[in-house]
Length: 239
Image: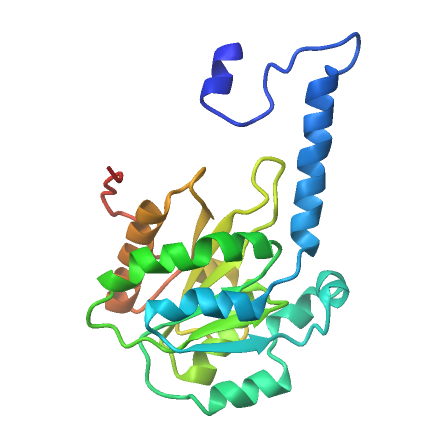
C-alpha cells in the first residue's frame, strides 16, 4: 500500500496510533480541511485579476451577480446565476457578434482563478486564430450558469466559463472550464462540456488548453455542446 503514495496525493497508508491516526496525519488532515474552507470564503480581487488578464490582448470588463456578498452567494445559489442590473447594462453597451466569450468567475475558489485563469488563457488564446472574441468578463460571486446570461448579453455564440471549483482536501485551488454552445438562461449541465482540475498538480495548462481548443472548435463546427459532444482529441503531453 505504501507504494500507492508515489502515484496519488490521496490519503492512503497513513498508519495508525492505537485506534486513531498518527498525530502528523491527523494534523495534516485538519490543515487541508482548513485550507479548503478558507478557499471557499477567500474574496476575489477583481481589480488585480483584471490586471493579470490585461496582457492577453483582450479588453476586460468587470461584472457581478445579484449576490451582494459571500454569505448571500453561499446561502442562495440562484443569486450567483444572474447578473445584477448594473452589469447587465454594461454588457449591453458592448453587444456585438462574437464567436465566444470567456467569463472568469470566482465560483467556490477565488484562489483557483487568481492562480490559473491567466496562465491557461495565455496557452489557449494564440491558438484561436479566426475567432472573434468578446471582451473577457470578470465576474464576482458567480456560478457556472452566469455564462448563460453573459453570452447573449454580449452576442456571443459560445460561452466558456473559467471558474473556481469546489475545494477538496488535496486541491483547494482547482480551476474548471465549462463550455456552452448558444448560451441562454435555462441551459442545463447536460448541455455543457466540462474540463476540471486545471492546475499544475492536476491537468497542466498546455493539456487543458489543448482539450479546450478541441472542444471549442468542434462545438462551433457542429453547433452543439454537452452530452452529444465527445472529447476525441489525441492529446500530446507537454515536454
